[in-house]
Each structure stands twice: as C-alpha cells, then as structure tokens.
Image (cartoon, rainbow, N blue to C red; front, side, top):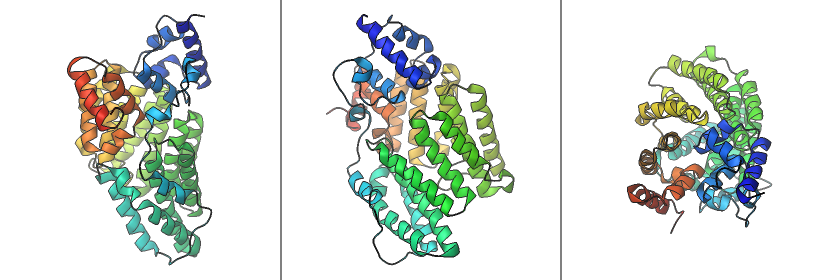
Length: 398
C-alpha cells in the first residue's frame, strides 16, 4: 500500500475499534465525515502533527506510531501537561493508610470542602489554587469518614466523595489516567458508604466522564441511568438539580456516539429541570443551571457535527451567566471547537484567547486547546501570530 493508503487503513481500524462512525469522529476532531472517508481511502495525505494528535486522543491511541507507522511519540507528551504539584496529590491518593490525628467535625469539614470548591471555580489558575489544600483536605476527609460513627460517618463520607470529585478534576488531562480512574472509583464508594442517593448521582456524573474519555460510552450511560433512578426530580431543590446533571451526562454520551435524537431528549430533560429551578439558579459547586445547559448544547451540536447549529448556539450563549471561571473557560473552548468545525479560525483563536483570560489552567491542560493552538500557530498572518501567543502562554512552544 502507498503511505496514505496505509495510514488510512490504520485510521479506519482504530475508528472501528472505538465504535465510532465517520460523522462522529469528524465531529469530535472538527472535520467532516467526508474528510474522514477521504483519509481512510487514501485520497488525502495524512494530516499534520496537531490533527494526528487530536485523532489519537479521540481514538484512545497512546502512541502516535500506532496510527502513523512512524517513529514513536507518546500522545500525552504533547496533549497533556502535568501540573507542578501533582506529585503531592498523587502521593496522598496512593497512600495505603490514613495517618492518625484529630477528627474534623462534619460541619467544619463541609465548610472546608465548600471553600476548596470555591477556589476551583473562582481562580484563573485553579489547579495551583486547589493543589495547596487538596493533600491536607483529602487526609482530613478520609480520617473523618473512617473514624466517625453513625449519621456523622455517613455525612463525612458524602463530603469525602466531594473531595474525590475535586481530585478527579485536578488530575484530569494530565498524564496520570490511572489516578483519574482511582479518584472516580473512590468517590463512588464514598457516596455509596454515605447511603445518599444525591451523592451517588453526582459520583455517577463524574464516573461517566472517565468512561466517555475511555470511549466506553455505553458504560457511562449505564452508570448514569442507574443513578437517575435513585433521585426524585419531583422532590425539587437539590434532588432536581442532581437529576438534571445526570440527564446532561446522558446527553453528552449520546452525542459522542452520534445518537442525536437520544442526546437531545436527555438535554431537554436537563433543561426542563433547570427551568423548574428558576432561570437564575446555579448549583453552588456543580454549577448546574440554565446557563450550563446552554453551554453544553454547544458541545452536543459540535459532537454531532451539526456545524451551523453549533456555531449559532455558540454565538448566542451568554458565557458571563456561568459563575465559574473554569466552566466559562471550558465552554469557550467548546465554542472555539464549533467555529473550527465551520473553518472559522479567526473566531476560534479569539475564543481561545477569551478562555485563557478566564482560566490559564483550564486552557493549558485541555488537549483540544493545546492541539488547536499548535495547529493554528503555523498559519500565516494574524491568526498564526495570535495562535503562537496562545501556544507560548500555555507552554506548547518555547
């Protein structure tokens, strides 16, 4: 086979192994189904490095040589950046036992966990902010959940689950996937120990993230569907918000699998829940609400490769309504992804720049933002200049 044909055969093999159709793969990397077909049929030359890395990330390929047949290049070495303090958090996660010490009362623990979540949402360098408190907070939460009794122990376990969710977010998009899985699994165990359906629903939301990231979309849907049955949306308030969050997770899984109808039915359920909570409602740490639903609608349309609708929703979204800087940055990255799908490189660079102003850490650790900044830095003119500044700011180029 010629080189393009050999590359195309490998691409098709990995796409089919991942269970993705051409439209789904195209949508996830910002290209059309016809572009994927042309690559697989050998009618196009293999793309440049940034797009190769994006394909490898989506197809869960760890070494680029498996896709290109060329020299070895670990995908995470480019797409994922390790935070400077990750070793301290990892050491606590990998510890076999919890050190002795005074037990933190549940009411104090809840306040400490709330403060840590506030750091995550309100900082432009959220990983650096929470890394300063996570090791000690995780130790305290583990000790309280282990040493308290009765109702206090269950409440402490629910707070421990919330700490593990924060650990998972901190570790995400870093070259330590086994620790992300460990955090998600321990959070689910803690939520179940708490005997708290609402805590279990949130644990399912975060567990589904790692399933989707590993291309296990059906497993993500199963864990979310089981969690949805545990909470009563008719109860209002907290249970309705967590039920709505689960519906969003189901919608995101269906969109990544190219199932448009089922994705939008689940999104409609989430949006309806947000409306019932009130137009200005935002969950204090999950950030669920109407603004979050609007932002995730951009993600869904982009994943489904519906270019016009993705751009329309991206341009209509009020990102200021999201009170979390990390969530605003992530939503702006998805808006950039929508515009890249429409070949809107100027808009994409502008949106990535906005995202960087909201949260340096979110952009620095986002694989899509990293590869797009690298790709566009080779463009001539203003687009290339602005993209090179982005790439420099997030540490891809020196």
